[in-house]
Image (cartoon, rainbow, N blue to C red; front, side, top):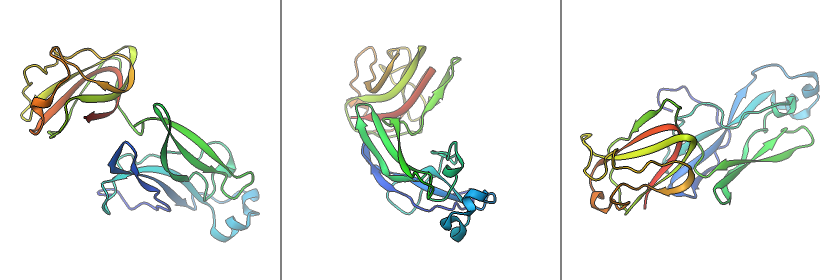
Length: 232
């Protein structure tokens, strides 16, 4: 994990993401051995007596299909939660990976209570692409991407704003100069909540003329979350 110390990963559940198969999502189980002594009730569990008390949780990792995994967000993706029985090894690990379960949503299934009955799965629902977001507060914020090369006819975004929020988007050359016809002033003001919203400027949404050469995307946001971007 680069500059970070090694992690104690038990299972990785690495699968291609159904919306972007070139990206692999890993909802991995992280163990934290012997964080504290077991309670008297836990000490009576044969499994705890054999293995000791090992806290477990789920973390989010990604990979491009090689042996390098990115742990950008080191915090727990699924915490153990309330109840002593959830703080046992084999608890809080996901079964398989994320799966689409409805329009605009996807789900993960998490084992709970480890070896303590009643053992069960808990379904947790996420927004589609909702692993993380770029968030802008009410006072506003700005995001500029690295130079990228794309193919496709239009840019679509997965986003959510408050009623007073908004997103505007500018296309820039690799050196940061705004592209005529795609400047911030020419961008429509995007307000609302959508999984695939085409971005439009005064002349429409067609970005075919910019395909195949390096560009940057500049996002001006207020009270908004940006979950994903895609050219299609």
